[in-house]
Length: 261
Ligand code: NAP
Image (cartoon, rainbow, N blue to C red; front, side, top):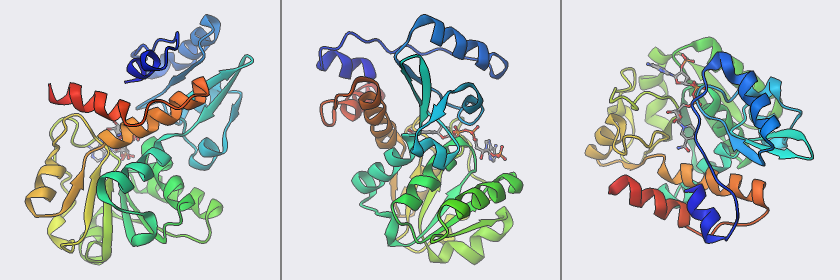
């Protein structure tokens, strides 16, 4: 989708994917620096670990404590987080949901969850509940966000507490974990406890229809996969690297084309 946008804007850039093992991250960053790249994205599992190799952070990344986009500017590597704002944009476009609307349950506490919670707080969410397999990570995320956004009511809850105590009053559930990428269900989540007006967002976009999306749509709930977020975070990264705005909707159109072909 980046290459399609570079081409549409007549820009002499190219976007190339590299698989980097966790223990090679530092070497990969040095290599990119030496090659003189303009910027890059980082994804699972590097979004927090990358920070120690960078020269500075934009507010979006500082808020989240996670980076998905890096700009190399005058030899300095600056980290940004475009995931969170990408999610907020996709929630509005794909689910007609704005963060002020009600209680939001975030499943997961990794890099993607960090970007999501920070952006939801910036967008004036009222109440955010974080639930994660490793409870300590949910608590750490809650505590980081509480310091930055004391006006938002943020709670970390244990998996076994979620269903009966919280789901009946939830407006939106966001899956930020990688569960679903390999066809697994989120075992601890009982969607039947949600009200009929609740909405479900799965950040996973491959497969397009995850077990969560399948189950929630089968129950008549409004759902979206993470394709809109992927396009939206990409549009923001494009602008950071090039200073230009990509043609509106082109990245999503491109993704929809490849995903459906
Ligand atoms: P990450 O930092 O490695 O975090 C992974 C999260 O998933 C952690 O909360 C982890 O829980 C949880 N998890 C993984 N396997 C699990 C399992 N079997 N059972 C329960 N919890 C499990 O990864 P990330 O960067 O946040 O990315 C997470 C997902 O979001 C990926 O699928 C990625 O593709 C997607 N994503 C999509 C977009 C988009 O544009 N649509 C953007 C960013 C990310 P523990 O803490 O207990 O390990």
